[in-house]
Image (cartoon, rainbow, N blue to C red; front, side, top):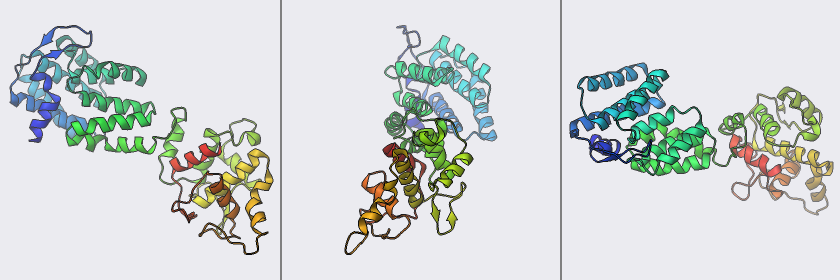
Length: 358
């Protein structure tokens, strides 16, 4: 059943007329290949697609042997031959043999350039992600299996760091394809979902930090330096190392101190640490030192001072920072009552906080 499904999806061009779109010519190509050979190509697809993310030596050899076995049958059908050449070229790319992949593409294009497998190979051989996306966009409405083109678009959009669009492409493609596509590329989709709020203008190194489920103080300082202007008054616009930043910010009282002492560069930071850093930097950036003790100063004037945040009491070293970050909406109370100061900070969450502060 699965084999039949794959055959229908990937080799629709073997059963119907195929329109050549590489040069937008109008000649049609009919395939006379039987269901058995269509199934063979489908099996090749099922073995090669997973190699995009897990290319084991034995699996590559097996896929190459299957292709050679089919080549030796010398099937005289232009669509079938073009499709087989395209998958062979895709495998050459996995093997690191780009010249061979280019030769396979040229031969396939002389036979049936409008076949989706040929278009995928052509896209993968483009010299840049921008060129690849432009080609895929021009082909997507002409493809016999548009979901396969959407897979390639999703991967390319992710490479271009257009994550929100990548998620949409993944979600459009997966339901129309065999399950091995989701099994192969599902982690890329989840990565795009995690990073969907990141602007393409942010740096690639920041993307890597944003994807981390927990960040260290080094990570936090790197993101502050690379993604905000909060340090401009301190660095004068120079690109300081995190070591230099750490020393200077520590002297200014911006590096948090907890029950274990001053937080070190390699230490994982918590929500409390993040609140301290953000609030201290906000006060420094605005040249308003009074912000640092604003809430403690206010609450002392009350007859019965009590913190509105259940797990950050008045008198806590984090009180002013937490109150400030919550009131100014740099951070939130996850359940509406508690701050959860000891929870770790994911990179993407910290980047979103920085965007609000900046």
